[in-house]
Figure 1 (cartoon, rainbow, N blue to C red):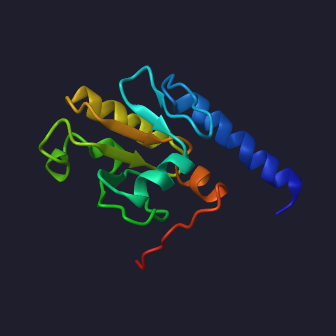
Figure 2: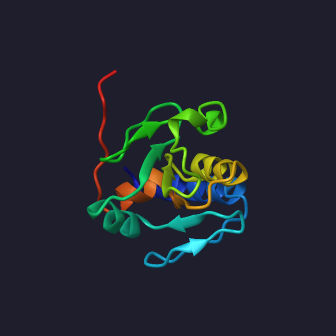
Length: 143
C-alpha cells in the first residue's frame, strides 16, 4: 500500500470512530477507561491479557462478517442485541466483551447492553482494526 493510501485509511477510520463513538472516552494503549455510557473501553493489549485467562462472554457484533478474534463465543449483529438477548448470559452482572471491525458498532452494542441492565460490559476500542494493528491475528471462517 502506498503511504497516502494508508494515511487516508487511518483518517477515515478516525472520522468514523469520532462520529460513531457516542462520546466514549479514548483510553491510552495501556489504560482502560469507563465511557460516559456505562461500559469500559479496553485496548488490544488489555484484551490480549484478558484472553490469557478468559473469564468473560466474548461477542463479535460486526456485520457483515469480516473475521473474528480467537475465543469468540458468539456472533450477534450490533443492531440485533435486544432481539437476540437469549444469546447473552442471563446474569446481568456477567462480564461481556464486545467488538466489531472499527469499534463503532460495538460501542452501539455496548450502550444497548447497558440500557438492558448489564453492568459489566467492555468494548474493544478500535475493534479488529486496532487488534490487527497491534500485531494480532484474525481468524477467517469459510463461508
